Length: 119
Image (cartoon, rainbow, N blue to C red):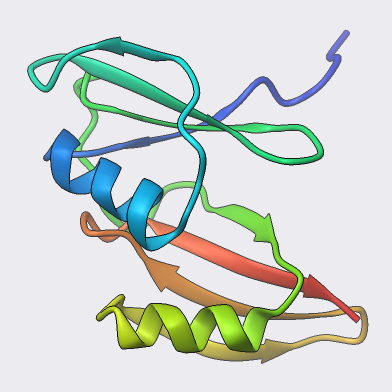
């Protein structure tokens, strides 16, 4: 019945600020963009599949408490250091598990992003 996850979407309050975070701070490559700052939907196609979208079209309020996307990274510690230097809020610096290490950061609206690195 289900084929795959089509996308993960986060609601945002300020499209320009969110785009700066996802494109400049995180370094994601922008994909399709629909609309403008008043009503916008922006997609970021992730390497290896998957799509992360940000939008102010849904009427949802941004912030913590909703779903969380986990982004696979090749050097979690180096990325975390770079994000901390850029002033990004870190809500969990290191979460070890038997198979991976994770950190949790927040976007400007408080949406959580997990930085995930397999061991």
